[in-house]
Amino acid sequence: MSAIQFIDSDLFGPLKKKALDSQRLRTNYNFHSGDEDNPHRFLNVMARGTYVTPHRHLDPPKSETFLILEGKVVFSSSTMRAT
Image 1 (cartoon, rainbow, N blue to C red):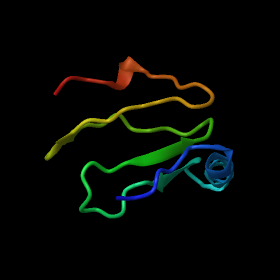
Image 2: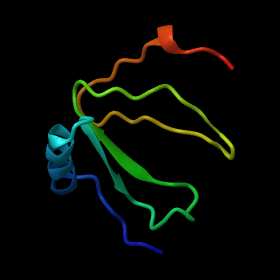
Image 3: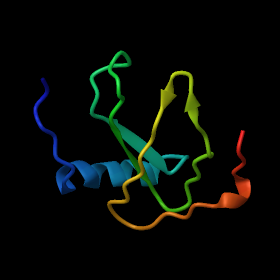
Image 4: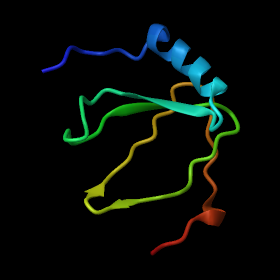
């Protein structure tokens, strides 16, 4: 079992800088140890101006959770459709 990892300024600060410096204005930090882990647990750090394409994970089915730690997010239903 892994040690507890906290999302604090020591972790979050450098990731914010890395996101701002990246072309896509985002970066992620993996809490899971590898692709075989289920579920995958990671922190996505997204800077203002980034865009995440609406998507679903169907095979195998997976859920996603957004938790806003700082700032705000805009969801647009104009690009979403039921399939």
